[in-house]
Length: 183
Image (cartoon, rainbow, N blue to C red):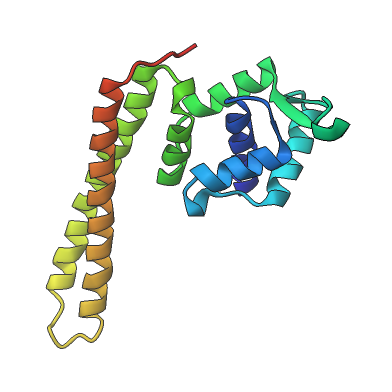
């Protein structure tokens, strides 16, 4: 999926919380998204223009403090359907799973749980593949200059997968304890 498509779904997801101004959307993403998941101010602006043009968001001009009018954006019914369709679609990568979890309260609980379980299974399969590569690395002669570096990268990958599996298990446990008000 193109990176700008994520910006579109981020904006839709944030507006699914409540109507907001452009600056409130930017502030929300800065405060609650992981550092690598923040979208640029330009991406918020261009996404809002596109989404408004497609009828996925509306723009109102209520009077603000001091009588100044601010543009307040709200997601439309069509926008909610588009967001839900994307949230329910298969993920292209691990980052997309995290992004969808940020807006997981829009999903039926069983759908979200299955997404997290599938993510965990993919990471477990990844570990098996990395361990096979580690065996090939171990078979290299000890004099091979690249051996410790190859092993270091493989260990990083295994440890990352283990951390992601732990996250998935913790998330599944948390999902069992919360009440969803899914609509």
